[in-house]
Image (cartoon, rainbow, N blue to C red):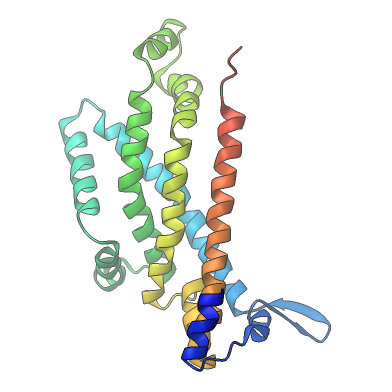
Length: 240
């Protein structure tokens, strides 16, 4: 903090922290309303939560294709993973927004969700595949011997065990997704980053605004990490 104050004094910068609360919430006619930053946060949480659900679905399906007996399925899954992981997210967003978006007739928010889901899904697929491969083959054979169908085997035997194994790395992907969601601001989506940039343009308070935005992102990621630890303990198998 001392270093920040020294730098601000050298730049003749005057802190205006007292103005930040009005961009979080404000009172009008006795009613409290969310400020620009909170409204941007709601957009970020909406995009991130929907993208996370789609990421899990895409990652799991891709992992199953990678492990399938179908040459076509394995080829499609591998090609998808290699293409997505070998190109920057920003380039993928531009391609979806300026090329596929107009062709498919999808709006900005849907494009952002699609881009994030496809990007994180490629990384999550390897997590799901490792989790599935970590299940002993004997577990599946035991399920089959009990007369369970393949779907029921996955539902009652494979997936519960897999979830316990992949929670830590999957949480890292969720955190990355939240941080990567800031990139969608290039599409003029009024998320937390865009709102922060607009406020900076209007108020010339870059330090206060960006420190606040960073703190909000930090709170989200710490909450996700704490939730992952709770889930890991909740789903852990007792030793006795």
